[in-house]
Image (spheres, rainbow, N blue to C red):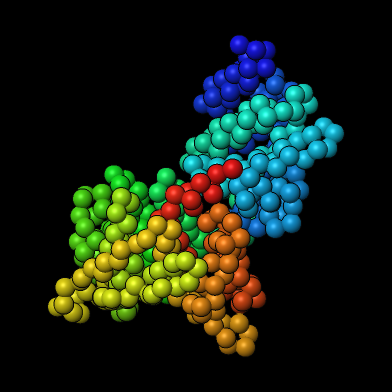
Length: 401
């Protein structure tokens, strides 16, 4: 083993062994101590929940970096490794948990500067991504650093229930965004990928307060519980329907939530879906919208008792490279000061334009979300949630450097 390999092995050992008893605010000191052995110094930046700023993970923070106008931001946007040939040279590397973008790592190389050094730094960034996710469960430090605006109580509840915003495997990419992230009240999304099948869902409860958040939480937990007990989409909707009905309070209007529940067979591309009073999913193929998957539409979750008609599933055969875009009405019905809606055509056009530019799916949705915010001059009147499912091997490769 070469001297450099021994030094990097020592770096990884020190981080892994030291992380067991290190708090989130102690990660920076642990990294400083460990990486010094390989003549490298690192700075970790965590992206904020709105994905506009990269914020230092040190107890005494450095100035934040903008995602949209810095070299660090470009590494984050494109999940790419960018070399800066200063003296000393340094690398900007995306920090990922799987394919979920957590931030970036600046690695300054005081010694060797070659492909092998770059490979070691990429492996270090991967290890740090896993550590960040593990510490998020035990500490408020990183949660606070990710917030540029205080959360509402409903947002605090919902964000704790959601899976990471991005997941990818060899055949599939799923990515989602929610705005306004700090005060979202009734929107949510969920997904799971196991045994050759992908389950995705999106929810939108009536209202924008804590009651809406509780209704959405109940609907999400019910469908997740049904899925984990081996039940199908119809049974999941029925269980959620009953659970939401039970939240009715005397003197108040009964709560309900619109939703889309879907299941994709990764081997065949067959998509089954259930639309419960929600805007229908949009099927995008070859750069244009083919159709809205709106048949059949059933009543929202919590209102199933108003109809004796059984809930039925829709079926669609996807082609390789197809994208299915789920959204809440806060996206398409967002109005500018002149009253013009954002609309479905603009949503699809922006999605396709960014995809055609070669951007990873998470960056595409981040930019579409920014466009929705800009359309309403930064002040959304309703929760706006987007979830993009892409059945493609190419898309999965684009979310890694």
